Amino acid sequence: MFAAIQPRRLYRQVADQIRALIEKGEFAVGERLPGERELAEQLAVSRPTIREALIALEVEGFVHIRMGSGIYVIQQRPRRSAFHPEDLEGPFELLRARSLIECAIAEEAARMVTPAHVAALDEVLTRMAGNFHSPQISIGYDRDFHTTIAGIIENSALNRFVGELFDQRMTPYFEKLASYFEGPASWQQAFAEHRAIRDAIAAGNPVAAKAAMQFHLLQSQARFSESFGEEPDTERGQPEGRAKRSNTI
Amino acid sequence: MFAAIQPRRLYRQVADQIRALIEKGEFAVGERLPGERELAEQLAVSRPTIREALIALEVEGFVHIRMGSGIYVIQQRPRRSAFHPEDLEGPFELLRARSLIECAIAEEAARMVTPAHVAALDEVLTRMAGNFHSPQISIGYDRDFHTTIAGIIENSALNRFVGELFDQRMTPYFEKLASYFEGPASWQQAFAEHRAIRDAIAAGNPVAAKAAMQFHLLQSQARFSESFGEEPDTERGQPEGRAKRSNTI
DNA sequence: CTGGTAAATTGGCCTTACCAATATTCAACT
DNA sequence: AGTTGAATATTGGTAAGGCCAATTTACCAG
Image (tube, rainbow over all chains, first blue to last red; front, side, top):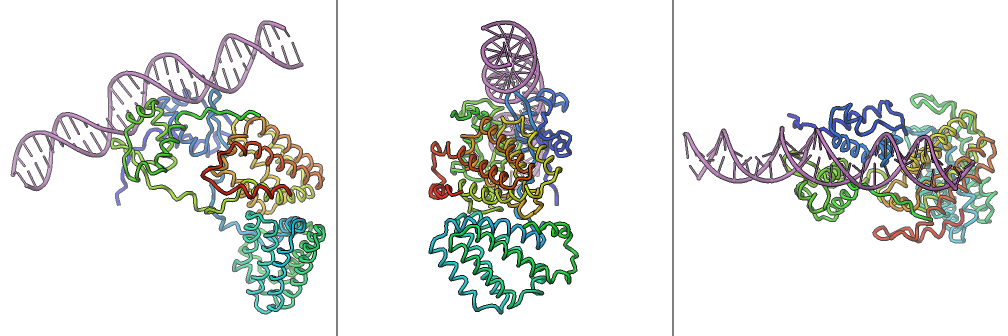
């Protein structure tokens, strides 16, 4: 169809030019760009127009205007990419992240645990105890266990992140890989490790809780690695170099 | 201490008034609001100021200016719901989550830091050193510092989360609250704490790094709390109960 | 009465010119 | 050496006026 012609307002054209210069790196961040008067002269427009363009850029977050001092380019923030669909992290990277965070959480949880929390953990464990046959059910209980621990410290931001991190295994790629090693045996092993974590937390022993959690996630990684040789390792790209460093955790 | 007074620019005050009127429903969507000249008269400011305010509102997406016709209220954009719809965590909860995670990260970073990483940290610090006047710029550098530390352990999942957690301060509510206490003085203090963190990490001292990070975030919270009594605490509702738990970290 | 055209009005667009307020710098002073 | 204070640079804001686009109104022909 026809494009509604609309004579672009002058301040927009000016703002576009300046914005392009900033994005191209013509002006470094933090640098002060020419004064209003000079800009007006160079772009052959009046000063109020320059002011309008600068106000637009300020609202957009490109520049910061300091009264009496000058106009400064502001740190360009990657504009809120709502969720990051593409940069899915590799399996080992995720396990490392979980280890770092969940160890700290377990440590803290052991400090502020209450009998009610222990009861909640026990309930998850008893539900888990029998069902080692269906991978989906086991994974669900596994998730419950970890988020219940995160729930002990009652911080919804952390709770949310633990859940998110866990759910990243639910990608098709991850599931296919998991099917190689997840069986009743490995789930039973994981259950034992869970119980150790629960006992350490229930005992109010932060050091032991952290160690138990670390051991559990390390074992998870080991179980995972076992079947990793058969993995084609294609179409994913990044995780080879980083896996080597995961031994420090 | 004294609150850093910063004379809000006139166009912002005007824009705030008009925006408030729109949000309160004083002007219906699609409706044409008074002309530039009339607005200038009613608000007792000059016409260019009105124009600047309208341009700000146009960039923000509140109004649409049709040349030769008038100024029209535009369909209200869905309040930034793309990201995390409404489960915004309270300020202290966020600081607690950051403390737990970033302390663990700092500890680990001190173990695997390289000269290149230290150089990156130093660069952020030097860039930060001069600019204590603009809150926006300082916040940008602050964010850089924390994400750079997270970058040392080269785990994109953690890096992403640290950034996300930091960005939760960018809510309107948070910013309004922050404007009470953020001034050159508090940024300089934060800078010193940053330097301590950098030194501990550069020295490869995990315990000191963790302690420095913990101290820094604790101080952040203290600076924040200072001005929390003055906060009107209206029209927002939630965060009072959660603050009490923050003493354990 | 209907349809179209032209003028008048309204309203935003842009400029020139001026003064005020603030920040920075540097020199003089204690 | 540290502080004070004036000079300078820069942005903040105002005033008045001419110009252009859109809308409305008035008018006229059919």
